[in-house]
Image (tube, rainbow, N blue to C red; front, top):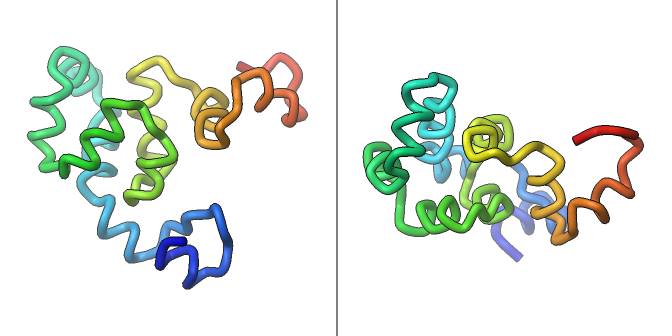
Length: 118
């Protein structure tokens, strides 16, 4: 269990507190930059250079390379920021949620009350 989990007492949950906010600053800054079309194009053209531009750690870069949304959360990524990364790469909220829970998209959607959502 991480220090954050122990501090908040919520196993399996990563509370976006000041500690995680500081840890994930570079991730969130980079992801927020993807709100601009020219930045999305630059990221898609050369992900490595774009991540380097924002000073991401190797661990953060690896989580992005692997599209490991749960790991991004554990490293301080905030969902509201990394959804911009997901959208840039063609991943929607429900696809990200399924991966974070370790479920297939179909399994995840069977637990949602959102008929027809994608």
